[in-house]
Length: 104
Image 1 (spheres, rainbow, N blue to C red):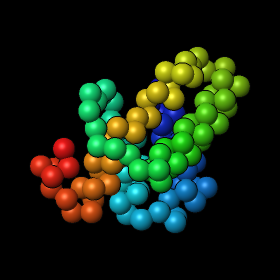
Image 2 (cartoon, rainbow, N blue to C red):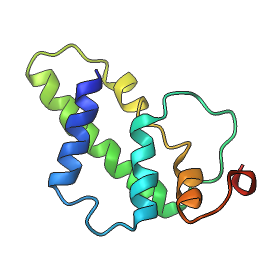
Image 3 (cartoon, rainbow, N blue to C red):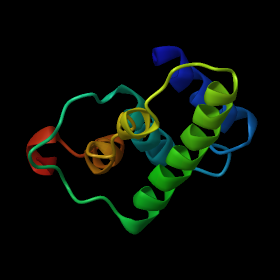
């Protein structure tokens, strides 16, 4: 459910997840919340962006656990799969000022 994504984002904000990130890292992380399609190819994701994606997934797991405790029907695997990292590298580089033609 879409509202759970808002809860995950709110939890990340209130827990200070974004406080130490650069604007480029913030933009890359936010791409995980909006990208819904499967990408056949995507720019490589750095170790740091991969670490941030894993932190987002961990927070999503906590929200999912709470949702289940509240008896909300939720397919955890499908829900966690909705936080895609495919655009993180592209959005990061675009935020740095690179043109899409350079990135893709």
